[in-house]
Image 1 (cartoon, rainbow, N blue to C red):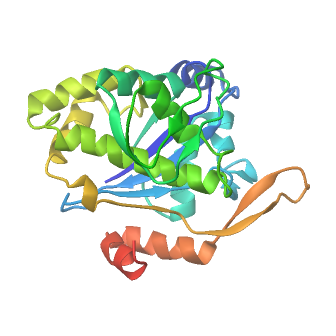
Image 2 (image 1 turned 135 degrees about the vertical axis):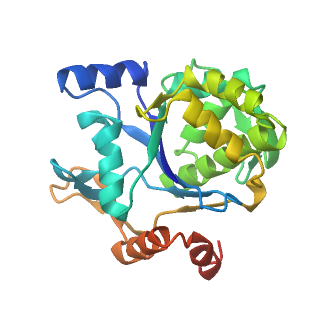
Image 3 (image 1 turned 30 degrees about the vertical axis):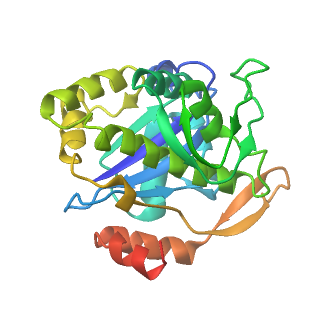
Length: 279
């Protein structure tokens, strides 16, 4: 199963913006700050997370070559799904999308998450947070509430390699969220899985087929998954550059590396890919 996770950078409601897009066909004031393909292999032993840099300069079906994160603004999550499907030559079964408020609310609802911070930093306050709320992240385990979690997954200015470290931190955060949900017994039975999905449903935008019962079924099926054994990596890139018009900083896709990932996905062989690349 492939599930595309999308984080919208809208300051309001991503769900409302998407509903308006679908009703009117107009663009919306949101880009995809986070794009991560979650691959669940048939044996359900572990999860693979593939982060896609938001500035990858790729073809967006029907619109031409531009940054991949622009798909959300142009036509919503369905276009982001179509773009990733074309890039990786794979089928995406479901998508789920959240926004700033959604991340904060969900993390606070489950009592916070314990994140193993790899590189210490003090956040630069995003425009959604009030001045004076800058959070300082120390090396090792940090217990984060909703606001701190949002600052952790959004920060890039504090790092020498900017968005590359932000993507790695997003992977760390998703693993921590998995630990919180799977290792604490939160989804130890069907009833608890349905309860946690009920909490999440209020802050998620999902495709029509990913109804709460289906989402709960997936969550329950993963109850035996070991988050520590799960593998996260970033889709290969060939460095950074400038758009042809010279106006935008972009990430250059490594199409040979992407083809290797696509082949592994097609064969349900990400375990062999991960082993070959030391992941």
